[in-house]
Length: 60
Image (tube, rainbow, N blue to C red; front, side, top):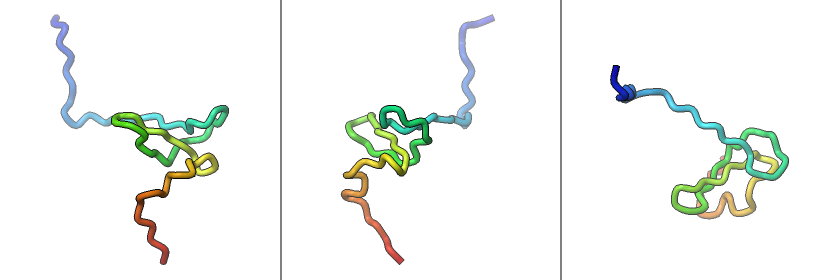
């Protein structure tokens, strides 16, 4: 037996993104990259004030 780990090239990946607001237990649907490799996740209730800055918002 070897110590090699076989990884399927298209293996499914699941990430848990909970709201980063202290005490909140909701799902963090809205992510904003704060620094390289660091994303802040928030629910709609605790959405960061600057979340929409620099994003194209389309109103129909």
